[in-house]
Amino acid sequence: MEIDLVHFCVEDATACRDWFVSQMGFQAIAGAASNHTRTEIVKSGPVCFVLSEPLTPASPAYRFLTLHPAGVADVAFRVGDIESAIAKAAGAGAKILQPVQQQKTPSGRLKWAKIAGWGDLSHTIIERTGITPLLPPATDFTFPNPLCLTEGAGGSLQGVLVTDDSSFTGIDHAVLNVAAGDLEPAVTWYENTLGFQRQQKFNIQTGRSGLRSQVMLHPDGGAQMPVNEPTSANSQIQEFLDVNRGAGVQHIALRTGNIVRLLDRLRRWGVTFIEVPPTYYTQLQHRHRGLLSASLCREIERAQILVDWQQEAPEALLLQTFTQPIFGQPTFFFELIERRLAARGFGEGNFQALFEAIESEQLKRGR
Image (tube, rainbow, N blue to C red):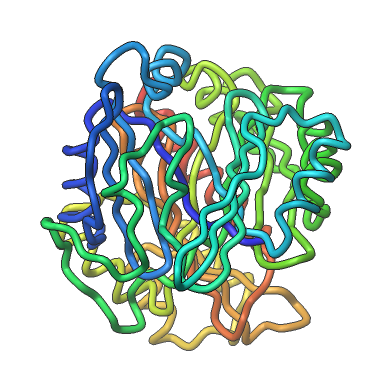
């Protein structure tokens, strides 16, 4: 199981598309409108985002936006056997929003179905054989035919095509925030319904607040979904839940082969990132003395990157940073991640530093 695409509901799909193109370097692949929903597709390498804006109250995007601010409505998973995946989900009690459907083309076959996820999140389950349309031709958003394009099709508005090692190479993980007390039920739901397995577990505390997190990994592929719950009323996770009006996807992590070069480019294009406190780099040098070269330490600090590794593989570096929220409210943001030498996990030191850095941004908002 892999993350196939992510579907956002937004107030203005055209403006959102233009932001992805001009500031994140995505390409605009297609855009069209039904009688109630305007949808745009943007793509960067294997990363595909669908952006839907309601045109009338009949739109599913309208219904989502009455419940939540702009954000992720659906995380679609690609599987090898959709019938087995849906049978497992149904057997675990999942609500089937759309049964398995398929479309055959001369060059391939696309199968899809949809289930209700945690909270108001949904999950489209997709099976692809050969060259398939990018999107299912009929969903509850009733995408018109112009959006059913094969891989590689171009649109009228193109982003800056980046093909070096600093381009996006995939979606690394999607993070779900749930209410206090819901961590165990949510994790159990994803285990029983979609077959995820538990990996690392974190309990992060500062002098002010905290969170608990359980990393979920699917054994059949690379799909990862950490689930967070707050452990205090002033936790940044609780702030997300308050502003989002319930559980939802807090961030999507985008993989790259060269995070330093990518950050330089994105900052030039106007993307803003969290500030890492200088004390992090002082502590980093003491915590892992001799492992990082002086030049690498300077490069990491200049680029404002978090770095960590596992003791059994110290040469496999995990490099991360995080954008500011992209929709103007302290809800959804992106993570950029580089896994050198196939570094695994999430890095407990990074997790603590991330929490403290976002907490610092929270304090600036007076929360």
